[in-house]
Image (spheres, rainbow over the protein chains, first blue to last red):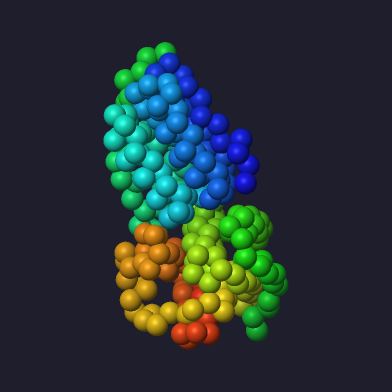
Length: 119
Length: 136
């Protein structure tokens, strides 16, 4: 379980997380913890989750992401999931995954625009 | 005659789910499945391997290449000696879960694959066999 597998970066008033191609359960749980700590520490508007490199999204990953999005909303922020690959979108839909309160965007740039950040 | 090129991955830890995923990605890419089908197969493998870890604690995933002469495919078998499933109809229902899960694992995996068979006896364990055939 690599603690530094996923890093949470603050850019202006947003947290940016880049999800690796094949995230394990431990890293996904750590991601949630780091995001909530980051929200508190940096007082940002929200979270952009870049999953453009992510090759597998299963029900565990989707559940933690949906939960995290809900927690970010409760803290007063927004979550945008950016860059889902077409093959992942097809698979996630057939599997029946839901992403809860999270918004989506084609790219990180669009996601930042959705949250209302200008860099 | 179905030719069987095969291998196994022991599932006894959370990290073995990733090993199962990587193994199945490699095998199905080598077999020439499309990127979308590789993603479907790997995702189903992830769901079913996690079921072993969550419900039985440990078990084995085995993979086998199917070649009928005009059709090529992959067969994955997930076997555990856990508590077993009392009501197979119920676990195939969307949203049914005895854990904290979403209840998508079995019905979702069946949609991602071409074929699914479940054998289970309470107190003895569960075996799930899924197949996917290569298109075109």
